[in-house]
Image: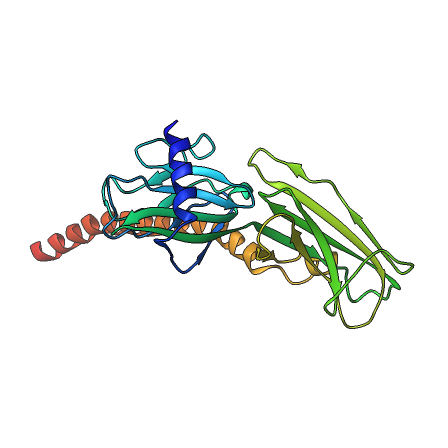
Length: 282
């Protein structure tokens, strides 16, 4: 009942005078991350209700003062007015794709009904590994592989060449795999591009995310070495690992030599003292 009365009060006030709208702000958060939606509320009337509400794409109550969070946000959201009465900011944790949208923070101050609007953009993080064929081979058809990992399933791999999006055609074939989740909560995507050799330029793969902000954090990894590279000059990392195996043996041998020299020296000292004593008696 209290929630219904609060909603009717907001509708009544917003339809009349005495409403002040603040400048709209935009915040960003990575999927599964945290974000602080700021809403300073100086001189807030503590006897009047204040609320957080999601406006778009669907109207959803987030928080109403002197009440609990709605079920969707309970356990992963926090309000700070108990510690700072003029700080009406909202902390959201474990961000989901559904959290993206437009929010409103509203309260009474000095006889005015203040509304502060914020936009939350959620983006996903993916690691992309593209494996290119051996460029030294003179082949008319090239096969490229793209492997992607991320926490958001609604995405797809796309290929481009010289900023032009590639699609299936008489000279190009693109094969996508299904997204499979692993024990760590990551989804694995893969795509294979089979195309005719087009000279110097190489195609590249990236991720198109559905339902989230257009901005995505792409972490590129190095391509796996070809067979020719693997049989060529050893990788520095492999050489370093070999050194790590040799160093302990060298240290043991060196320490053994030092101890042996000390032992020999202690054996020689008594003999030298005996010789000196004989010469002294003579």
